[in-house]
Structures are given as structure tokens and as C-alpha cells.
Length: 452
Image 1 (cartoon, rainbow, N blue to C red):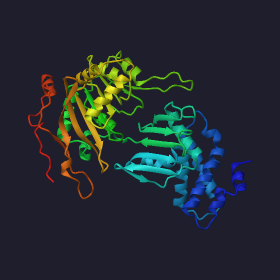
Image 2: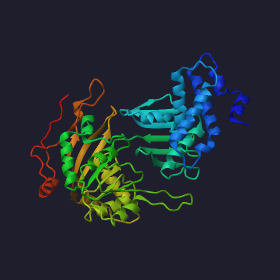
Image 3: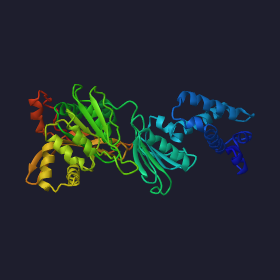
Image 4: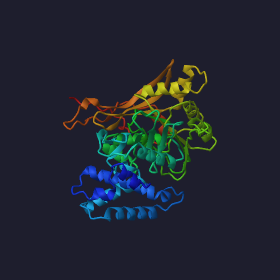
């Protein structure tokens, strides 16, 4: 029995029957789209499941089939309605379904699918509901399978959580049953098609031109930099921007769980971790790749995020001649970032004294850049902190710059403060001078906080 007959027998209308109704409301358009979606999948299954298929030819065939189904009887559908239905059905079958238009929307920075009927987006740091829907849970699962399959990952009952990425580098996380009680969940953190530049971050208020000048000098001077912050604060974006200061004649190795960094230098080697296969074997961890990268003659090692035992190997690399390394870490403040590093080194399985770990970290790292997402949705650098060394058992840290909260909040709800220098000249400025990188005398000039 064909799907058309099954739908009719079950009391649902076929596309032609729905089209004959005199008043086509949004609910009817959704019914048409749903029925067309099922009919096309059944009638063109062999073409859709072909391993080698020409997307242009397939799209043309699907468009012709859709046009025939919509035009087989006179209907009150306008040309605009037909175009909308055709676009939505093609997105469902060939693209990423109802989230395809959200992926194309440059104002959307994050897409959150809680279940097939509930989809939220983030715009300018704020979360808003949408009227987008998946047909059902199976439809959402097909889209998830399509995304993770493109990067060689899998998601099933044996492995119900997965991190993946879209072709443009956008980060994807999916959770399915039995862990997801409300149905499959999908979260996509989008990356701009045109990577942000330092001028963009200055325009957004993330940092200032003076701070950008300092960061450029630090990267060129091969300081080891740790970028910290909470989820969604812009750590990877800042890491991408800071990485543009790396000279083009250096050999750069990037190591990530899911490849997101987009460096434009000519000599970049990109490594991505691999999860275990269905038998639980074959896993390649970040730590394995950090150790292997040391045998690949790197000038710079960039780790997308330090989150486990690889922290020990990263610190050892920084302490053994691999200067200029960059990485990110989840933390609530610069000092919390150092504490997290300490905890992650202990996860390596070596029974190291805490003092020895702190000495390694204090010797390896020169600078911590901390970001936060403020209440107005903006992402700002709120601390730039130098690691000065050890005093007793304590890592000595000194703020070079801080975010001035005392400037208050404007009538539009936006924070008026900006990053200000404390007036203290960092100790690493001597090292930069020795390398021929001279900073302007007034770069670190003290900026008084605003008075309310």
C-alpha cells in the first residue's frame, strides 16, 4: 500500500485534497508540507539513498515532482505559497529541515532544538522562541544522523551523545533517547561565514584597540596565552582572532575535539580527536595528539580547549621550548582557570605534588585573557592577567587590565564600561623588548574608572 493510500485510509488528506480547500491557512500549509515530505521520501527513496548522487540533478528532480503534485488540480494556493512549500520541503529532504533558514540567518548565533516542536535561537546574546517545527521525532533524528554522518561520527542507543560540526565549522551537540526524555535534542553554535576580525571585536566592544595592540605584541613575542571564560563567552572566536597574529612562516598545529578553528596561514596542520567505534575501540584523545604533535616539529601548538589530562602534556610542551602556544579553558575567573588546570593535571593519573603542578603552570603560562557574557548579551574581555611566578605555594597573578563595571548601564540596557588598564607595566614587556618588540610607553597608562 502506498503512503498516499495509507494517509487517506487513516483520515489524513493527500496533498491534492488539501490544496482543494477554499481557505488555506498556516495549519493547512503545514499539513501539505508534511504529506509531501512523506510522499517524496517514499517515491524517490532509491535516488535519495544512492551513495553517489548529483545534488543538482536530485534537487531538480525533487522540484519537478513537487511542482507536479501541487499543480495536478486547481487550488487556491498562491504562487508565494507554492514557493514557500517547495522551499520548506526541499530543506527538509536535502538540507537541515526547518533549521535550514536559521542556519542561513546571519543574526542567529545559536540554535537550540529542545524537541521536534520546540526550537529556540540566540540573537545578540538573547534567547528567543521560533515558530519552526520538525515533522516528528524521526524527522529530527534523520537531520541529526545527516549532520554527524558528514564528519564520520555516529549517534545511537549505545552512544546517545555526540559532538560534531557542520561543513562551515559550526559546533553541533546532539543527545537522543534514552538520555533525552523529551525526544532528540540538538544544539548548534554557529560560526560566522566570514570569520570575525580584530576590528569586528573592537566594534562589538569585546576588547579595545589598545588591548588588541598588546595582544598582537604578545603573540608575535611567543608568549603562552590561556583564554578562559564560561560557555558561550566567545573563547573560540577570540582564539581565532588572536591566531591571526601568528607569523605566516611558522608551522602551526591545531588540536581540537571538533575542528572549529579557521586559520589562514599557509602552514597549518589540523588534528581532530576521534571517539571510540561501536566496539569501544579506536579512540584518539586530545592528550594523544598533543604528545604526537611534539614529534611533528611545531612552531606553535594551538589546543581548541583543554578539558582533561592533556593539561599536563600541554604544560610540559610549553616548558620545553614550544613557546607561543595558545589554548582555551572553561573557568569563572583567571585564578579559577589556574585552579582548573591544577585539577586537570591531577586527572592525568600521576601523583604529582600540588606545588610541582603550580610551578609548572606558573612557569609555562604568561598571560590569561578572561571573557564573560554580560547581562545585555554582549561578550567582553573582563580581565587580562599576567602570571608572574610563585611566592611560596601561591601562583602570583597581576591584572594588567579589567572591565570597568562602574560606568553603569545605558537606557538601552547595554553596559557602558570598557576594558581599562591598571597602569602596571607587565614583567613580560622586558622579554618583548629583548625580541625587538617595543610597546608604546603610554600603552599601559592608568585609566581611572568612571564615576556614576
